[in-house]
Length: 228
Ligand code: UTP
Image 1 (cartoon, helix red, strand yellow):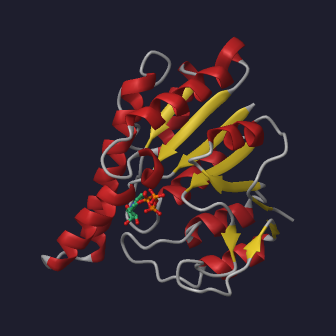
Image 2 (cartoon, protein in one colour; image 1 turned 90 degrees about the vertical axis):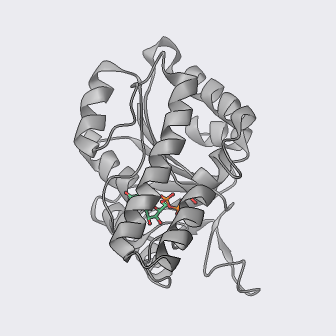
């Protein structure tokens, strides 16, 4: 099975790289590729480092495009630290393009990358990579347990959604303006790709690795399912 995992930088590197978490996450990946059962493509987010540098560059007068580029640099840094833990079974350099990641996956069971171009987040990259490699499973492991009707950190009446349609997702993702570093559970570019290719997508909290393992094994898990 080909699996694409979008892993939030906010979990992997909340305040600098969380090496204990990275070790455990890596063990899970190793388990998944045992006996060449699966191929795993991992797209790593920028997290706090990205936000911090984006805020600074914006304050220094940088454009949104430039700030996105800074965010992409942060994703590459986080991708590289994950590679530090998996380099014996993955690519050695974070892939810079989706085409490179597809190529690398021919030779390795694990491929790791970060962002690619300004204008979207690593969720967008993950969804496009899913299309390109014709994957079977898409998991967005992030810093929220569910997709909510609106941002639960801002709105007390936000409702969690265990299941939602592609159009629901587009509506929810469209509520947030797409500036560099902006935070939606799934960005609008990704939401549109998920819809156009009818990608069944799982969103769950990345901190709970047992839950992630269940979801990857097709077992019961806590999180949202986006589908028809
Ligand atoms: P992330 O994908 O990390 O976004 O990219 P995120 O939603 O903050 O993810 P978490 O917090 O890690 O879960 C960080 C920023 O980098 C730029 C965007 O500005 C994005 O908000 N970026 C990233 C791009 O412009 N293009 C990319 O392909 C990836």
